[in-house]
Every structure is written in C-alpha cells, then in structure tokens.
Length: 190
Image (cartoon, rainbow, N blue to C red; front, side, top):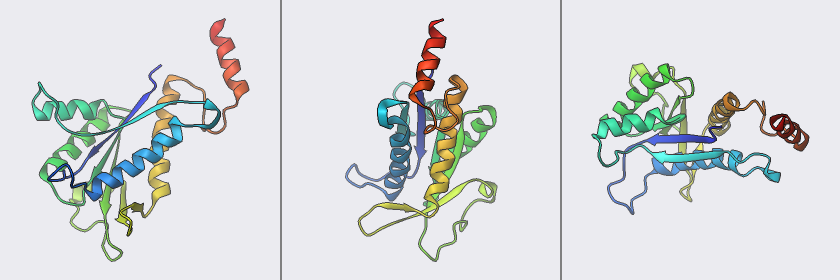
C-alpha cells in the first residue's frame, strides 16, 4: 500500500535563511493541519504519512526537470500568488498541466490579502476559476485563512480519495472502528 501523501508548495523565496516569509508560514500552517489530522489519530486507528516539502531543484538535474519531478510526485500543490513571480507561475503552469493527466494531483492557490483587498486583484485571467484562498497574518505572525475550513476540507478530501484508492477502509477517517480493522485483518489472513 502506498501510505505517503505529499503536499508541495510554490512561493516566492525569502532572501535569507532568517527571513521567513508569510507565504511559508501560511503554507506550513495548512500542511500541519492536514498532517495532524491524518498522522496523529487517536487510538492509532490510522497513521498515514502526510509530508510537506517546498518545490526546489535538487542536485544532478536541471532546475526545471527537478521541479517537474517533485510536482509529478505530489498529490497536492499549494501555490502562493501573493507576490507575482515568474518562477512561481511556471511552477503553477506545470502543476496545472500535470493535474490534467494525474487523477491524484490537486492544485490550490493562496494569496495574502488585507481586509480591503480583492482576492482576484492582479490575478492572471487564466487562474480565475481555480480554488483561491485568502489569508492574513495576525499580530502574533500566525496565518489566518479567510476560508480555513473550505481549504482544509478540500485537501482532506484529496487525502481520503488518495488513500481509498489503495485501501477501501474508510469514507470518513473518523468512522472506522477497531472492529472494522479486525475484520479487514482477518480477511487478509484468509
């Protein structure tokens, strides 16, 4: 069984290691919410591995080839379009194109907005119609999503669909019981 689900992220990089961007904080927050939901379930009913990684090139390949491979091996790509950046838009294009070929690849966009900002302001027209979630930073530096439940639930649905394709154990991660697991184990032993 394939028990690893990867969330990858594309965003404008910080200039230095000590300069963490709001994009990074927001994406890590949503990835941690998903990871905690599926990796740390009570009673150990499920322990699915949900990983988060930034899209960046690896040694030994061209940058574009490396990023293409990372996107191809992801199940969700979250792209922050707060600061228009040509590299981020190239990564978005690759992710959108690959999502047309791969059943288990979803693309979500996020954007930092102030209360008065229009979420679609400065958005390329080709991206209108995609899921875009706005967020803002609170005084403590925590990312607050305007529609946190909608984004989280959409990604949770992707996780469930992905794992259900490999093992038909649950429709809702909270609904499986210990008896269900015992029954599945006894069936696999026969």
